[in-house]
Amino acid sequence: MVIRIFIFALLGLSILSYFIPVEDKTKKGATEDIALLTFTDSTMYTLTTDSMHRIVDSKEALRYKDRDVMYDGVLTLKNKDKNNKELTDVLFSDVIIKRGDDFKFLNNVKFRRDNSITLNTNELLYNDKTGIATNTLPFEGTYFNNYIKGENIYLNLNKYHMKANKAHFEVEVEKK
Image 1: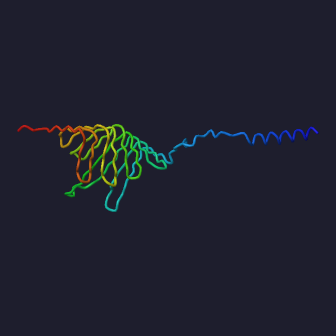
Image 2: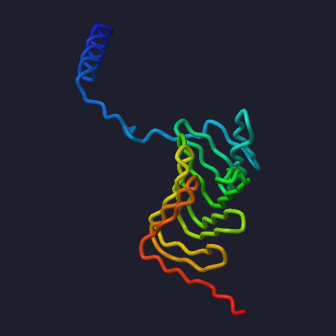
């Protein structure tokens, strides 16, 4: 008799617990973004059939499912101008985020093209396929030893075209 009461109590308890709603404690958007690969003091090369097009050096590189994140990185681009002369573009940054052909340089960004152009800013967006660099923050730098500063720069690295909003350009005049 006692066993029957115990079994019916278990059956009643199990039926009652079936209808009690259970909360899902995990948040739907809170999946952790874990790096798939981590490299320390990394150097990555992009090779074509003709030459080495791009070199990326960084203190730490993290590869995620949809992007690469590099810390204390340097991007070196090798190009040729219209006279077939070698040009070297170098971009320094504290953080580089790469998604496909798009690079996002953040914090202490420094751009240098040989001895002709230098730019300093805190943000620079670069598309490797089009060769266009833009930003939304103020910048300053030099253009052939002349001071330039402004906002929202547009820099076409293939066609040697540059424009900016609220630009201030100081030409250094040599006295002879």
